[in-house]
Each structure stands twice: as C-alpha cells, then as structure tokens.
Image 1 (cartoon, rainbow, N blue to C red):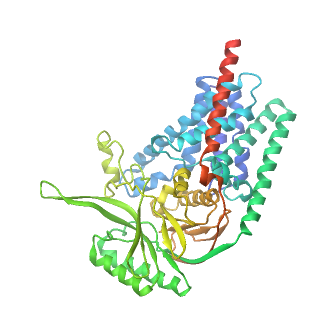
Image 2: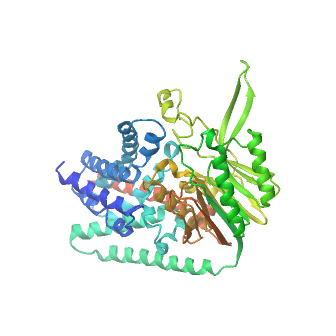
Length: 506
C-alpha cells in the first residue's frame, strides 16, 4: 500500500474521534469518512481490508482508550499491559471495519452500484453484529456523535441508533462520490436530499407533538455521593459512606422529592446479608417515609458445601425499599461486564483472574423487573446495560428508565461523557424519560425527545431534585425492535447477489 492508504484512513479516524464526546464536534462526523472511502476506491482485496483495519483501530482506540484506566488503576495491571489489553479489544473491533473495507471495495468495482446504496446498509449491518456477537460491545456506534442534534436523533424511535449511523454513512458516501466524479449525480442528490428532508421534518414533528401530550409528574431526588473508589469497600469508611448518602438524601427530601435514587453499588455492604447495616438502612427509610432505590451487591445461593465450607454467589442489584422500609422488589443485573463482573471461558482464560481480583464473578439476573411507585412503573439498568438498545426495549411497559452506574472506574477520561450520551439516546428510542444516577457523575435527567433537563459535573458531591413529566408516547422501535437492522441485512444480501451475478456475466 502507498503511504496515503494509511494516512487517509488515519485522518478519517482522527476526525471521527473528534466528533465523539467529550470534544463532540458533531458536524465532523458528516465528512470524517470521506478520506477513508476515497481510499477504498483505489484499493482492492487485502489492501482494502488493511485500510479498514487502520481506520478501525484509530477510531476505536481514540474513543475507547479510557478502558485502560480501570484495568491499570483498579485491576492492578501495569500501564503498558493495560494499554495492550485495550489495543487487543480495538483490533478485534477493527476487524468489522476491515470487513467493511474489503466488501465495499469488492462491490463498488462493479458499475451501476453507487456508493450511497452500498456503504450505509453494509456499515449498519456490521455495526449491529459488533453489538451482538461475543456478548456484544456497541460502544462507539457512529450515530452517537449526533446525540445533541435533536432533530436528527428523533428517527431512532423507528430505527434505533442504527438509523442515525445509516444517515451519516449516506452523507459521507454522497460527498465521496461527488468528490470522486467531480460532479453531483442528479438522482443521488435528489435521493439524499429527500431522505434528509424526511428525517428532519419527522424530527421536528415528533419534538412538537410529544411535548404537547398529557403527562403525569413525579418529583425524583438524585444523589451523587462521589465516593472515591479506593475507599468504597474499605470497612473503615463504611459509616462515612453511609452518612454521606443519608445527608444528601435529607436535602432532596426537603426539596419535595417523592422518590430517592442512589447509584450503582452505593451501599458499602451486602444488603440483606449484613443484617446490622441493612436494618439501619430500613429504619432510615421508615423515618424518611419515602421510597428509596439503591444499587447494592447481594449474596445469592448461600449454602453449605460437602466440605463444611460456605459457598455463595454475588449479584449486582438494585433494591427498591418502600416508605415503610420494606423490600418492594429487586432487579439483578442481566448483562454483566466481561472481565469486570465475570471471566468468560474461565477454564481457558485462568490467567485473567488477577485482572479482576477483588471483583469476582457475579451471578447473572434473569428477570426484567418493573418497579412501581404509586401509579408509575419504571425499570432499572445497571451501568453499561444502557448501551444495549435491544436489552432496554425488553422491559417494555415502564413509564421511565432509571440508569444507576459507577463511572469512577474511568476517572476523568472521556468514558463518563460518552456513557451519558449513549444513555441519552435510549430515552428517544423508547420515548420515555431517563433518570441517571452515577456515583461520581454524570448524574442527570433526559426527557422523551432527548433534551437534557439537568446534569452534574463529574467528581463532585451533588444532588438534584427534578420534577419529571412523563408522557405516554408511542415508539415503533420499542414495540417492534430492530426491523431496520434486519432490512439492512436483506439489502446487503441482495447487493451481494447482484455483484456475484454480475461477476458471472463478465
């Protein structure tokens, strides 16, 4: 490959990284892929795959470098080794872009198959696969660059986030073809203009109609304890941690909160198992006379083994205590973090144990719990569960989403900012508000059209009381799921058949 076959893809990856939080120059995403796509016009076979790998590695490492922070600071792995783990992940993800480059280059060599017809469905098909294969990791989906462009992201209530990715690839492909041919193809121009117009008109229509719907209200108190990860599980600081949350909770009660929410694993003890601390919390809630949702680790399947030793598993859970301090319901995290909450293929990857030392394997939940407060229902997503669109929609009947998390693992990197923007899109896809409570931030509230009503800064002890309006709106995506993604697979199947039949004729 000539030098520009590396330089152009790297340039594209740099521009695309700048379009993501926390920099988030969103408009760059609409042109970022042009250098990379131009490269694919001039390559074939292995060169196209390599160009995709170069672009993909730069793109994913630039948006996911922050993973090293938790592995290095809390997993005990040296800095170089931590970066190496992240690089291996990014190389795996780059394979999808390598396949994109290889297949796209192979298809566009045949005349009559324009780039704007091939690149969007191919990209979205591979993006969907990346979010589902091997437990899935749909972080860095290109559509998230537009999380703040409300008129564009309204389409996600039909297509999911993949519809925004489709549009971005469509525009990039159009600019690429225009540059390559030095002219605007009339039919291509009309098609692109029509699609953009429909999406923008639909966006403004949905924003205006949803805000005019009748609504219910509930006042929610959000507590951001900002507990340092290094002391979170130190028994010497237990009383300090509990006192911090209690003091902040009393403040939100004074502001009229009707429901209190604490973040993921806010409790520095095993709720229910450590009875003294559990009973103290229940008594506090009784005195408060308000329902409290809190994240907590819980002991499961406690039993005595044949060797007279005690064995048990742990769940990452959310517990709702009612006004009387009784357990109303419990949700156990369903989608666990590989190498963080469990080690996949542990018999083979036994040497990975040291990376997750002190965390251990958690038990996967199986029930899609709906919590009820008065007449309103909500469901809870714990930490990175919120990045999986297909998981979120399985809860179906909730009136609003609660996402509790602990992004202290990622320090002051771009990770917490990206996580918040990803969660923001879930509100639009499902047309219900999202309430997010994080240990160290970002805590915030997003309405059903994606507007951020309030949010905190990171690594700051804070609290918010929000009067949340809940409209009963309809979402195609929430009911029918990833039909748009399946259509992309169908389109790509037809395109490949056309390409193969064309090859036989020649």
